[in-house]
Image (cartoon, rainbow, N blue to C red; front, side, top):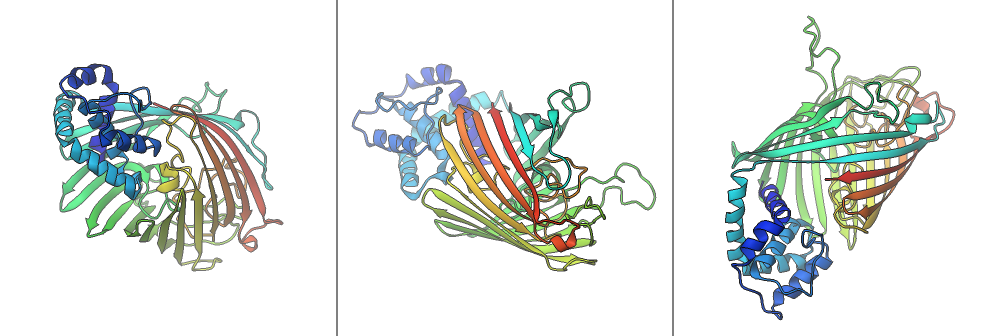
Amino acid sequence: MKKWFSFLLVTVLIVTLTGITYAASASFSDVPAKHWAYDAVTKLADAGLIDGYGDGTFRGDKAMNRYEFAVMTQKAMEKYEQADDANKKLIDSLSAEFATELNRMGARIAKVEAKTNTWIGGDTRMRILGNSPKVGNKLRGADRYDFRQRIKFWGTINDNMMWQGRLSSNWGNKWGNTDSSYGSTAYFDIMNVTAKNVLGLDSIRAGRSALDVIGYGFIGKPMAVDGVLINKKIGDAKFSAYTGNIKSDTALGTGVTGTDSGNSNQLTTGQVRFNVNKNLDMGLGYYWADIQGTSTKTGLGTLNTNIGSFTRSKGYDLSVKYKMGDLTLLGDYIDTKLVNPVGLPDSPNGWVVQLSNGKGPGATAVYYNAALLVDPAKKGSDAWSVSYRSVDPGTIPSGGGGFDTTAVAYPTQPYNIFTHSTDNVNAWYLTYENVLAKNVVLSLEYQDFKVKNRSLTNLTSDNLDKAYRMQFEFFY
């Protein structure tokens, strides 16, 4: 909540720079040209921890007053966790030097926040897609061009509670289909309330959210999962627990006797994460899933096989993040136990590793493409990532695969990579991102899929599909 509050604080400051900044700065004294703070702020700007003035620049040759230094310091504080030890010391020194100005600045902004407690933002995405399936048809015509429009709303309820919602166009919005639901249907893929410091917990989030509760997203989903998440820091460790429904249910809303009416498809997780040292983070988690695994003779079940089934599953996740200079390595290993397996090994497992030079959350906090590798505000910056995953059938509960939907194929064809990107596959995933202009990001992606256990399919080759994608994203 503190980070979120600080983010809003800086946002208001930037937006009102020509108004509040001018009026306030007149009451603060200039900082001498040889003051150590100039060199400190320059180093933070070079490290990408300060974006600068409203136009995105930092004018290192311009004399600044104490208020302007406070603004710069506040921006650096927002990215404190991304800083190395040397830059963290600089931020700490600046915050101590300009503590009075930061407090006065906060008092001024508090008056604005008292009148405004709701904000709006969004993003627009346009994609060009392609694939080379060994089974089924290639994407053709308008199916190779799609878009997504999202509008996000967020705000405060009181000092301890916030809310957020996001309205998104539905999956499969194809250019050239304005006369159908494709291109016109929208729904709320995020809608939740978060409370902090309640019931002895650091936070409780309830509602529709991303599934981001175990590991770095091997089990994950970037939107539209209904449940409850709790967080609690215990000493140097961070504990989280989650329970929710991660798949739709055809019986929901029917009230028919003998049906579950939405009680199935429950996923429950618990995880402890801790820092081993400044370069190494580790996490250990466990999950229980009341989600069936099914197959059909043609390979159209929830499993990427044409034989086998199970009723439930459970397992543990070991995750690791290791920083190697400018590179970040993310890794997850999942070991699963199937309940009532038929025709399948009862202890499947899977693993994924990703190496990236990116500084964004898609490189340092979650596997791409749940988030960006780059900071969209930094024009001209770029980043790459390389990942590989190897997953036995049944390792990850259906509907909870973090790489599902990262590739596009016709859902009605057997063994399609749209719904089976994290089941019975070995896959390479290569990505490059470039910030073409402020808040405009180009992404190039390539995935190469091979079936892992061909004996559980009717395929004659391990080659499954190749997927290509170029996309443009616009943030505001």
